[in-house]
Image 1: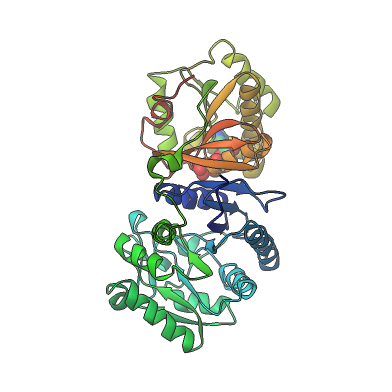
Image 2: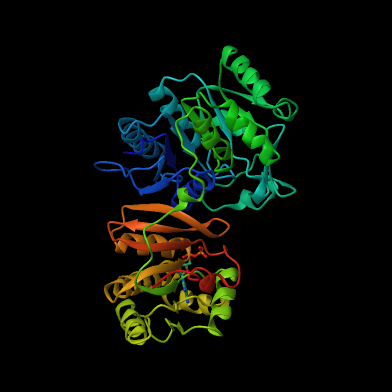
Length: 423
Ligand code: ADP
């Protein structure tokens, strides 16, 4: 029997989309992340998450892409639309959270939507409309210096208010504490009072679950992945979503050789490479010595010959800060990044051509380059390896991919990922 689409999601960046998909799968929904505005039929799943790169695009472009994604999700039967943005509310006074939410609300004919970026597990909480990162207000958290979206005001009622032509209200902590019925009432009052949005306070996961329940009948929900935690239960309560349990994370069987391609220079990834060195073959590329993408890739693929198999091999360009600085001084920052990304994408492609069927890619930008080179259109989300990093099944390539943001994962991540996986 075909699986009807329940939740249609639009995420303003790639890793944010995976984070949301992972949350929904843990809640018992099947989820597929689609890369870019979907063309043609959508994959079958309880939730489809369209991953855009619209966070820092010009507002008009972000609006147009989000509306196109929304159209595709509605055409596939989505019953509710979720607009996912960063838990630090990354945006500027020009957008893009306000303009995209405005356009989606207009398209969906809803006069009101909640806005809640809280993600207590990661230290993002909202109190009296103010966003905290750990114990610091957003504007004192380092985010005030973000190169693209500096956040210099922690008061989200004001921040969102500057980005929308609608009015913004607040459902404060004291109401959220009282649970779904009180939250629903407060939102109705705000809507009747002419507010288009409400920032919702949330300090704990219990708050997020209550907010999710209160938004059961909303056409549009906006927020971080945290507020999506409560949504699978709504669909179950309505009899639309069967109890899937762990089956929600089921992927086709793993096959093929195992490999790790690392381009992240984050501390966690460097630690993971160090740990792997004692256990499996590790090749560390030297781009200072060989500043040529094709030559680096050829070196790596030559080394992999005869080593590829059921136990993982690790190919890394990752380097400590002084080596990164040296390459950047030689080539320029951007060219250095592009060199490595191009080389590692070619390595991934070569490994797949030589029989690799399960790949871990370390680094956000590196993952983007690999996904693009392999021509991947969608990722079905599977079981979580470490918090925030699930195995996925990539199509049309037909292979298993784990795309690890640089700082994620425990020290043994590169081994743990392949434990219990068949060759
Ligand atoms: P993270 O998720 O840790 O931020 P990314 O892949 O997003 O990782 O970013 C790491 C960047 O560093 C990429 O652009 C990559 O090409 C670049 N890089 C990797 N190794 C080196 C190196 N040895 N010297 C300079 N830059 C590097």
